[in-house]
Figure (spheres, rainbow, N blue to C red):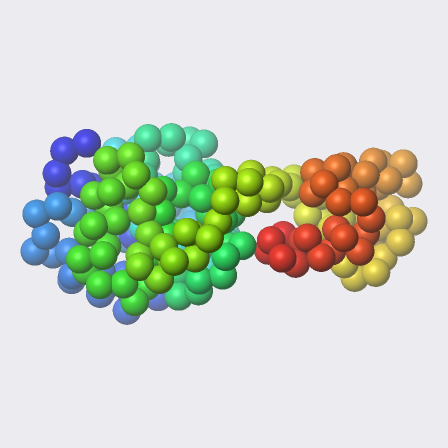
Length: 209
């Protein structure tokens, strides 16, 4: 990639998107080529594959940034995705990294931090704003590997389990056979490496599942 890095902003708060565009307007390192306020608009952008960097809000109105990051990396693996958020919850940071993000910045990071993180990410390093770095330093490789990727059906069943629904009730709600629901529940236990529903719900809460 050659400078300036062609960068797309995805954020549904105009003040953030416009502020970043203004901050980078005189930068020799970064060129803001487009800005979108929904994940769908980004995915429908026909020139997405020509971008170098996507600054991605973790919370969007139509899709969460964690799932969107995975879609971007699946379709355009060379794009550098840097997550942006006002939240520094460890489980969210881990899931973004697991889904292919090259870094995570708090929205109150300085322009220099944004520039530094973009340059680091483009050069192949993981990049974090200073407050996030302190959290990530306490994270082991095991932590990154221990957050499983759930299917949409598994997420639906996990939600119903968390609401106290029985296997038969879940079967009725989702129009699935009793055996199918049992299989999904067993898969959830295996994926999360837990022994029972109590441990499953505790693990899910701690890891933002």
